[in-house]
Image (cartoon, rainbow, N blue to C red):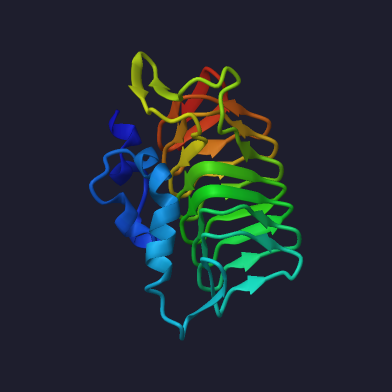
Length: 221
């Protein structure tokens, strides 16, 4: 499943969390490591650029955080990021530079690369969102299967057992997710792909595609 490999989904130069991917083949391998990585990295951040505002919470001095936002560590909020009214960051979250976490958006155990936008009523859990990816209003990652079984990544007849009960979506660089869409557990969305609004996405969607609905995915021109 080459489409799912880290180097084929993400530009690692666009995240402060680059080192967490070292030694991993697939991006979901880092999900159990995010908490400890944040604490380790946070303690190395420059006091000239970041404020430590709570237990294991580091916020760049240039970031804008609404006073109504709730932030529970471990968390790193990058330079020039914006965290808007009533955002709920539950913990184990890295918010990249120039990223936007919008009103009533909830994050949990995630890495948002630089310039990611989750601006309106989004839930992003146990997921990684690549550089300049954008989730439309009301779109979410579903991170637990209804039968509570371990998540398997499927691409046609190919399968990879992840060993993870909680796994939302691996969203590549420059992906556009339409409003009201659901990325089901184990979804992997290739770079430069567009997901139509109100989609229910499962499995692997190849890069440079337009996902119209299940079974109707066309090449982007």
